[in-house]
Image 1 (cartoon, rainbow, N blue to C red):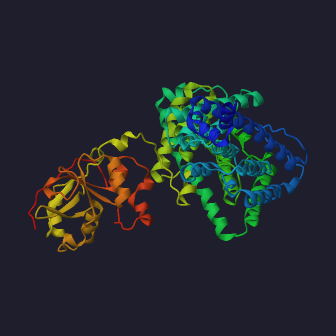
Image 2: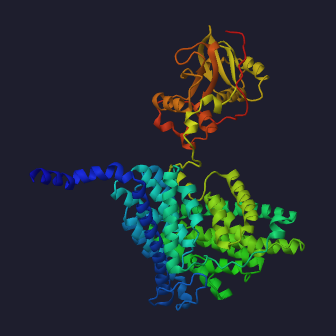
Image 3: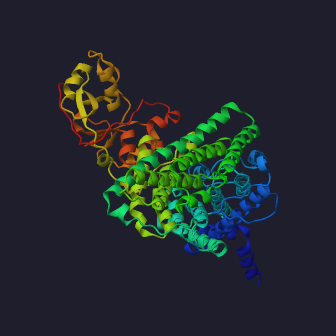
Length: 639
C-alpha cells in the first residue's frame, strides 16, 4: 500500500506532471491539433464578438441607442447629432488614447506589425491585456467614425490569444510561432469568410518556418474559425459581387491584358502612397503635438469634418468606418462617376492617415480594399470612355484593384489573389488578378522594399526578413552561391597597375595582394571601386588593403561561413585548395565578402555587414556588389 501510495504521489506531483507535459505529450501531433482547434474557436468567436462590439459603439456614438446591429454593407444613416457629428470621432479618439496610454501602448496602430515584431524580436510574447484593449480601442475608433479596418485588430487579438496559450502551456518555440500564425490567419479567415486566404496570410506574413508541423496548425485554426464565423454570420462573402464577365477583357483580348497591366502600375503607385502617407502623418503629429490626447483629438476632429461635409453634399458618409458600403457600391455599379471615385480615393487616403497617424487603433486591410476598389472602378470607367471597344468590366477591375492594393501594400501577394478569388466565387478572375497583383507588387518593390507592415518596424530598427529558406542553403558550399571574380596582384602594385589589369574583367573583382606567394592583403570589390573613383594613380594598394580575413577550405558551406562570421566577426573570406590555415596565394580559389554570401544565398537583409556594425568590435565599410559570373584569377608580376 505504501509503495502504491508512493507511486501515486509521484504521479500527482506538480514537477512530475510538468515533466510529462513538457516531454512527448506537449510535442504530440494530437495535442497540437486540439490546441489549434481551440485557437480557431476563439478566433472565430472573437471575430463575431468584435463585429458586434463595433455595432454597439457605432449605434451608441451615432444614434445614442443600445444595439448590436451592424449592417456593414449598408451606408450609415444620418446621425442624430447633425453638425455635432464632427465631434463624435474626436470624442471617441480621446477614449482610445486613454486605453492605449494607460493599459496597452502596443494596441496603437494597425496591429499586424506588432504581431510580426513579437515573432522575430520577442520570442512570441504578447501581453494578454492586448486582446481586451485592442478590441475596445479599435471598436471605439471604428464605431465613432474613424477611417480604419477591423481585420488588423482581429488578427492581433487572435495572435495574442494564441501566443499566451503557447506560453501558459510552456510549448516549444516553434509551436508558439505556429499558433501565433494560426491565430492571425484564423482571424482574417473568420472576418472575410476566406479560409484559404487566411491560411496563406499566416504563411506569407507570420511563419518564420514553413513545414508541415507549422502549416497544419494554421490550416486547422483557419478552418475552425471560418466554420464558427459561418454559424453566426452566414455563409455569404464579405461583399455581394455580381457574376463577372471577364472572358473577353481578361483572357482573350490583348487590350484587356494591357489594361490590367496599366491598372497594376497605378495600384502599385497608390499602395506606395498609402504606405508613405500613414507614416508621414504620424511623424507630423508626433513632431508638432506632444500631448497624445490633443494629437488624436485634432486628427479625429478633421476626420469628423470630412465625413460631415461628405454627408451634407452627397447624402452618405462614405469614408467613415471600414467603408465596405462604398466598396459594395463600386462593385455593384452604383458609383459610376470617375471624378467622384477619384475624390473618394483622396479623402479615404487622408481620413485613414489622419486616424492612424494621430494615434488611432485599427487595421489597414479595409482601407486598402476601399482604395483598390475605387481606383479599379474609376480606371475601368475612364478606360471604356477612352477606348469604347475595350469593354472592361467595372466590377472585375474593382475586385482586381482590391487585390492589387492589398498585395502591393502588405506584400502578401498570394493572400490577395486567393482571397479575392474566394470572394468572387469566379475562377475566371484569376488571370487579371495575377497580372494586376504581380505588376502592382513589382512597382512598389522597385521603389521600396518595405511594406506597410514592415516599414513601421524598420523605423524602430527591427528588420523583418522578406523570404524564408530551406536549411539546404546553409548546407551548400559557399562558392556555389558566390562567383565574384578575383584578381591576384603584387604587394607593390599601385592604382595605375590596377586599372590596367581591370580591362580584362567585365565587372569589378575582389583583389588579392600577394608577397612571395603569401596572402598579404585583400581589397574587396567595393573598395576597389572607391579607389578607381577617387583618382590618385600612384597610390599603393597596400595602403588601403584589408589585412583581417579568414581562410577556409574551398569546400566550406554557408553554415561554415556563418559560424566564422559569428565567432571571428570576419567580413572577408578566402577559399583555399589546401584548407584552413595560412595558405599561399597560389592556392586561393575564390574570395567572398560576408555581404556576397547574404545576397547570393538570399539570407535575411538584417545580416548584412553594414547593418551589424554596432555589435562588432571592428569592421570595414561594406557594400553590396553585383554578382553575375564565374571566379577568375589573373597571374601578374609580383612586387
